[in-house]
Length: 149
Image 1 (cartoon, rainbow, N blue to C red):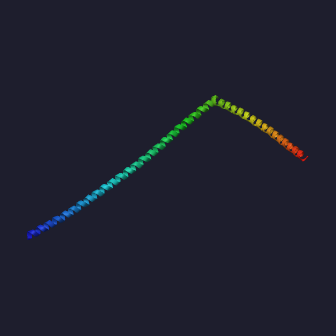
Image 2 (cartoon, rainbow, N blue to C red; image 1 turned 180 degrees about the vertical axis):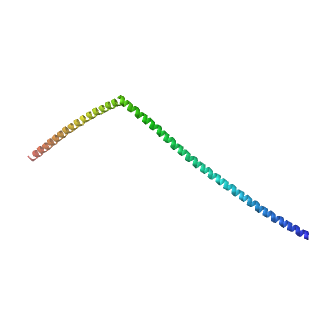
Image 3 (spheres, rainbow, N blue to C red; image 1 turned 90 degrees about the vertical axis):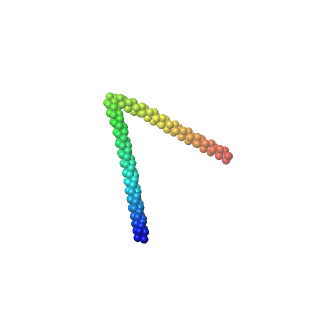
């Protein structure tokens, strides 16, 4: 009986220890999984942060590239202005501008002459229209006079 009781006590103690070990094993597993999940979350956050920083770096690079292209365009404009000023000093641009302005003046004079001619023709047409109206009024008055007689 003592032996049976000891065996049951030992079995109970063994079962108790197994449960405690299983509980500890479950807790260790849970903590390990929690640690793994936290590490994965940190890794994902780090990856997102890296992507954001890479995007920011690409934006900065594009801003720099755009500024460089603007600078290149400005350099071309400046060199073109310098060449134009050199040409003006040599007379090329000034002569071209003089001929262009003279052509514009000629065109303007021709257009002004045409406007005057059109205005005079409009005046003549107004005179002819008034004359026709007077003639029509006279004829109508003559007809009315004949009908009365």
